[in-house]
Length: 307
Image 1 (spheres, rainbow, N blue to C red):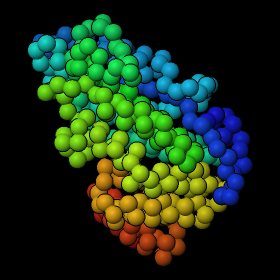
Image 2 (cartoon, rainbow, N blue to C red):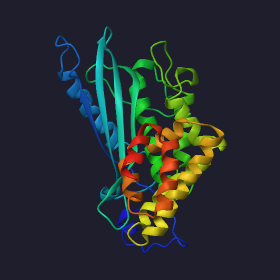
Image 3 (cartoon, rainbow, N blue to C red):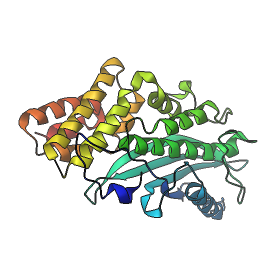
């Protein structure tokens, strides 16, 4: 997708051209405030520089993109513990945004916290990732870049899906490939179905399984048919967002509280309140009913703000 072209397009509900997403304008910050003062903090500055180069200088797709067309995304790596052998336990916050047509607003695309990050890093060691050999020679040394590459592909998949129906499939499949070939050791978690109900395995599963195809309809409907038309035709755009909630409700009825549904709603409550704040009482009531069921952690917000 070329956003310089996208910004010039005249959109309609019935004739929406196929667009393609672009690569990353990424920033990763490493926070080691919790690590003991006996650890040389310079290693984390070196790691931060290496990871920024890894994210921004690697070619993640076969598309050609101008600098102004890159997906804006941020990663925060919080180092929680340092162990012997240069092994670190951490959490990773992943955020990405998508511009909305005919506005200066950027909508949350990804907003997620992964608290199962463990890796080995020796200062100045190469920061590498090979999708044909994800686990590398040392699983702990490879795990951090595997996790980052996984979320890069999730971001790309979400972005492509938001511009073209099922446009993100190749990137979700790449994320699944990383899961299937992930680094493996007794200390590494998050890649397997038995590691919990909210992890990298289940997210990739939900985004690639034929059982949850309506997730992709929902992503496209929300962004391309909803937010992108908000300036031009607000009632039609709002109807598309409400239809998005119906798609997600169908999934939830069959398989309640799936990982993919929770992932979709992360960071969107304020935006959704704004969308339905000025609608008709009937539409607002339906929105509150669906949102309270689908985004349980924010149900009180919807009930209070959308009275």
